[in-house]
Length: 114
Figure 1 (cartoon, rainbow, N blue to C red):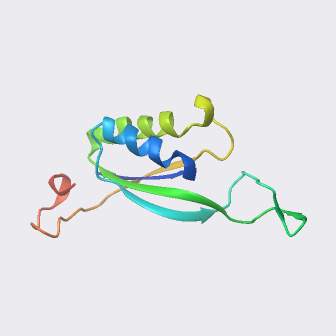
Figure 2 (figure 1 turned 180 degrees about the horizontal axis):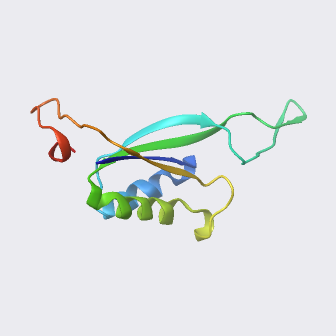
């Protein structure tokens, strides 16, 4: 089992969510987050050009069994790229081991609980 965490642009959420649904990956958690990477976006605020330190992003968290890792990652990559090629600020994907998963309702554990 793995936990896939993806940080993507806000405007890509609907595309990524639909692509994941089409790939039969329907159990996701979505959070609005702010972060700072290489992407720089200047804004005009009260007549002055400012570069905000934190840029709004979307964080997706998806717990998957091992056989779904590649399809999940590939789906996110293909649907989150800007203009189909990718641009600075498109995001990152992190894959971490998931030691245990427990479904509260039934008490099931492990891959069956996902």
